[in-house]
Length: 331
Figure 1 (cartoon, rainbow, N blue to C red):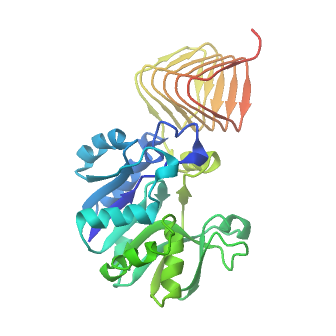
Figure 2 (cartoon, rainbow, N blue to C red; figure 1 turned 45 degrees about the vertical axis):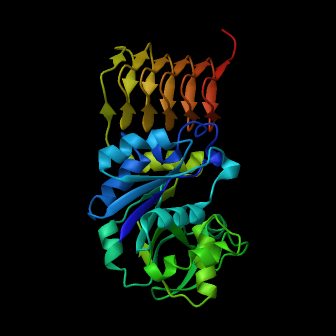
């Protein structure tokens, strides 16, 4: 069996934050998303590969060296060129050969152990499912209906979900199913694995479900990204920084090296402050601030601010600010 981590998307829903940064490498606490996945994969002692695109290839090279993983690169540079998830799986099979594959979405944060997940694998396609508890929310995902642990129905983004159990981007596919990908792709759908699961069921393939609880996040929106931070950031990680005696830090927070917390600032709870940031006379909570950003005389709440921005005299709530932006209100 081989492990394939899918990180070839351009994450358009999180633009501009992900315009120059792959979603799998966004920080969540003191680690990036890919670190959490690779730590779980490390329990398995299986050959592991990361699938990405030419645009983000250089970003992933250090991680392949860190974790001893291979890199498979699709020759695309733009969203409209991408192969889609199943197209990228096909490319991996072409390079690595037919085998059983554990396929994991690279923007996926989940609570269960992959060793435990594989113990449930019995030669049938196995998918991890999570109960989101809300039919409206389920409409955004692939929805499974189960009898015991057998999937009897699966619909990708249904208008009227028949359950609140959704597929979470972790799959084990047997070799015989991998052999059918060419046939599936000939029907023209290259993207979401959910449509592939739906297609398999319609052709009589057995699919088994592994149910888990506690937490799962698909980092596909600013809200899910910030909620993941709140769940996974359980203790503070503060590097060498400059901090005013009049400033206050409310844990948990991550503050990276060479940041300056000046004046009467309050940082936290649940704040990520990147390298070389300057926060002066400002409050930052439930927010992610990327490196080299300056915030003065402002209040930032449930917001994500990209690198090299300058924010002055503002109250930002539930905002997404792209890199190099300069925003201020008066002096």
